[in-house]
Length: 73
Image (tube, rainbow, N blue to C red; front, side, top):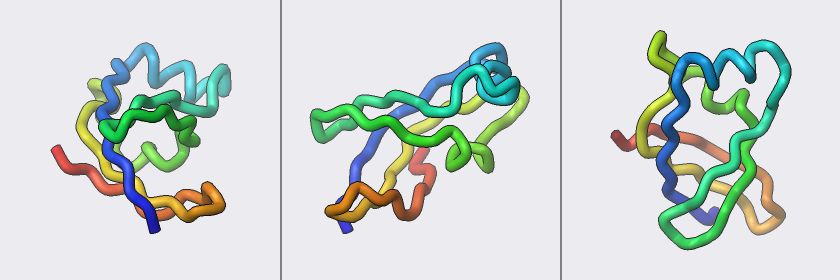
């Protein structure tokens, strides 16, 4: 599996748009130099009252299928 690292900073108002169904994917720029569109659902376990903030590592297959997401910081 391949891995990519990215940072996310969504405040509570931005997160609300996902809960309301207005958005369902998050566009991120990876440290490896490319952009990814990831489903918001995989970030749910990292949501706090302040939103979603941190640096994450995601694994993905050569077919583009997403694997594990873990928070680095």
